[in-house]
Length: 285
Image (tube, rainbow, N blue to C red; front, top):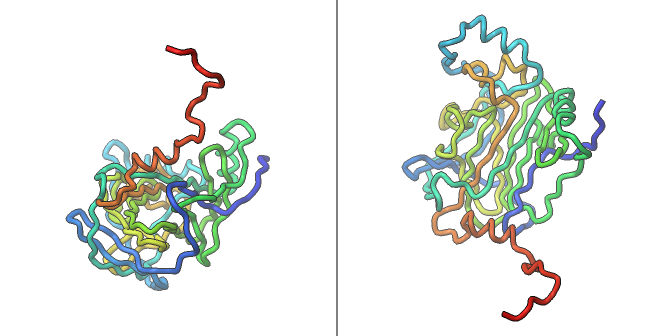
């Protein structure tokens, strides 16, 4: 049995600036033409929603795919119940198209799966994640808004989920600048359901605001809730490819006109108070 210390499941991106607590506020989503949508999630709808058409690889039969999915342990994310989530158009131009200034990754599984993944990485790597100086934070929350249990192994954060449990991705902006957020679950974009790429457009996170992504978007008015499920029942598996089940990714883009480019953020992050590592005076030339 692997032992570890439990912590709140979040990732901190140490960029520039930090701020006070953030009120809930409207967030937005950008579209390829520079238009986007405002978005406010609300209560779930009791009626179920159908899955999009399945997209199985031609080389494998349905029986082959079912056998492969049945053999995979652990959790994936299924296409859950319908939840109301309205959006409206808004404009946002990226400072560097295709070049996020930061990434965040969260890996999830059931408790035995997390323990197995932790054991895969050698060394005493369990420790509490520090959020000191974090300009943006990302966490997984349960249906009541509490952070899910997680552990830190090296540079990775593993979140513990339970089959059937609904969850959401909570992203908080502690800065005075708007940022664009492109998110994937199990390798699928949360807005359009396609394979994840930073070329996709995403939600716009306002200054000092928080954004809760609680499902795959079905329309301008609704999403399909994120729920932990068996791998074979996951949205990714039912679309024909469960290779990337168990990972959540978030990419962040600065807005055009914002002087805090990815290069400047990197320079700040790698700055040192003692740039000359020589301990003694050099000889004269």
